[in-house]
Structures are given as structure tokens and as C-alpha cells.
Amino acid sequence: GPALGVLTSGGDAQGMNAAVRAVVRTALRLGARPYAVHEGWGGAVAGGPGIRPLGWDDVGGVLHVGGTVLGSARCQEFRTREGRRAAAANLVRHGIDRLVVIGGDGSLRGAEEFRQEWPELLAELVAAGELDEAVRLAHPRLAVAGLVGSIDNDLAGTDMTIGADTALHRILEAVDALRSTAASHRRTFVVEVMGRHCGYLALMAAVAGGADAVLVPEDPPGEGWRDALAEHLLAARGAGLRDLIVIVAEGATDRAGNPITSQDVGALVTERLGGEGARVTVLGHVQRGGRPSAYDRWMPTLLGYAATQHVLSVADASATVLGVRHNCITLLPLERAIAATNAVRDAVAAQDFAAARVARGGSFAS
Ligand code: F6P
Image (cartoon, rainbow, N blue to C red; front, side, top):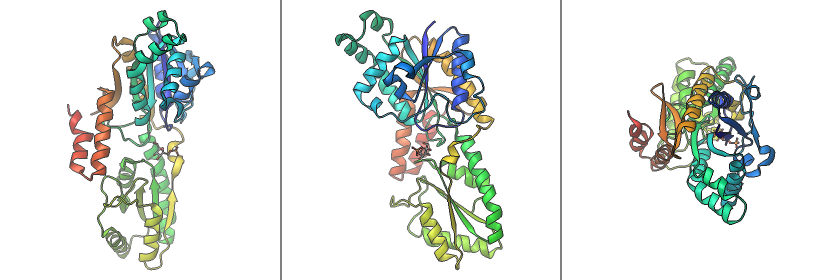
């Protein structure tokens, strides 16, 4: 049967293992030969033990485990043409011309570039005497299916990315835990959450955790934000609330584009809330660790199954992202998902939030 590579790239996310397991077992059931590509694109560039055939039992006992058993990396060499040429040579020598890539938007962008370059890369290898012409002719194109693995939930075209739900659970466990000590001391806790340029985790944690205020990149406050926040918190104290929680996305800025850090907000509270010392908790990588939630087990399982079926059945080389929209599995051209993600980022940077909303959802309305 055809050979198929599976890799996890970029920052890890809970639920990646469920996707890998589903890819491997679906491939075996469909008579294909699945290969692990280890350490992100690094395994493809390095070859040797970086690319390894996988059997049914190799992906046993991983469904409930966070992170990725394949290893992951943000690979610098793959950003160079020489790196991608080496990767193409190593993959095609195993007969691999189909890939399921599980990663964030950066990894999927890399996959799309690689797919487009594949014919040229193979031609260069033949011209350099490093590859047999017969091998090139047998694998003229690369097919790529992308699954979005990132706690940030920052790719347009899918409602949820793999890991975002678990990260949110992790954040809520922390917020719930902080509440009791906050209440005992009548303290304000400022909690910094991840998400890079995206405020999804911060906003949803604020809603689900009942936070008193939240700062996200998509809704940067205007000039008077310090006074407004201090007054809001003072009013909450005045109303008798003992535990106050402010959630700050790591990418939060003010309307002029200046970063607003959790330390800034902590200092503001300490200064303005009548001698009350705020405590700042930066949750960090704990958000990316631990057991995946039920959603981050079944959703990547269904996506891994669908991606494998897709990548084994396409005759052309189209690169596709599989995601979830309106609770259904959706296939989108990778280029379109990336273009929409870029459009959201540009619109947020230009503070055109109506345009950002359209780019995030409107262009994919079904
Ligand atoms: O993209 C996932 C993410 O956890 C972001 O939320 C965060 O900004 C970044 O990765 C942290 O990267 P690193 O793991 O390299 O410190």
C-alpha cells in the first residue's frame, strides 16, 4: 500500500496523541504503511531514525496522555530550501508522498510551502544525482492533510483547535483554586494566560471562571483603561466581593499597541486599590500539559480518521485542513485557512475588529 507520514510540529498540545493514534490505525486498516516523522519536521530533515514505520501497538496507551509521543519541535532547518530538499529526499526514499501534519499555523504554512515545492525539490535531487528518476516519477506530487494542534485556537476555518479545550480546563482549575485564597485575604489575583496573538483562552476562561475583568488582544482598551479598571474593581470591593480575578492574555495590548502585561495590571491594582497588594500568577506551560479532556480525545480521533481517509484517497496534491465547524468535520483548502488567519491578524493589528470578525468566520459561512 501507499506510504504515509505523520508528524506533530510546533508547540505541543493535548490531544495530539489521539490524532496520531487515529492516523496510524486508520492507515493500517486501509492497507497503507504509516511512518512516524519524529521531532516535527526535524525527523524528515535528519532522516535515519527520524522516520520510522509504525504498527498498531506503537500507538497503544497514548490516548489519555498529553503532549505528543512523536516529539515536536520548531525546526529552523526546514525553513531553508536545503532543509526542505533533505526532507523530501528522506521521505521519498521511504515512498512517502502523503503526510498528515498536526501543528499550529506556522507548521501548516511550512507544509503548504513544502507541498508546492515538492516537484522542484525532487527534480533538483535527480539533477544532483541524489535520487533515481524512477523514484521521482513514482511520486510526482505530495498530498498534505493538516490538523490544527495548538492550545491557542488561533486558526481561522475551524471552531476549535486540538488542545484548546484542555488548556481551558487547566486554566479554570487554576482560577477556581485561586478563588479560595483570594477570598480569604480579600485579594485581587491577576492571572496571565497563553494564546500568543489570540485572546480565545483568556476570554473563555473569563466567562467560564466568572472573572471580574479580562484583557484580550482583540479588544484593546483605550487611553483611560487604568482608571476604568481600577474603578470597576473598587466598585466590586465596595459591593462586598472578597475574591477578585483579572485575566490577562499574554498578547494583550492597549489601543496604541503597547503591551499590557500581567505585571502592569498587578502594579496598577496594588497602587489603586487602597493598599491591597495584588498577586500575579503566570500560568505558563502548565496550560499545555496534562491529560487531554474528553473533547480533546474524541475530536482529534475523528479528525485523524477523516484526514487519513482523505490523504489516501486524493488523486491530486491538494493541501487540506480538516477542522470542525458547526460541530461537523470540515475540509478547507490549506491556503484559504492560512489566508483567512493572516487576514484576522492584519485586521486586529489595524484595529479593524469588524473586519477581523468577518475574516475569522464570515468567509467560511456555509
Ligand atoms: O502556540 C502555543 C504557545 O503555548 C503559545 O500560547 C505561547 O505563546 C507559546 O506557544 C510558547 O512557546 P514556547 O513553548 O516555545 O515557550
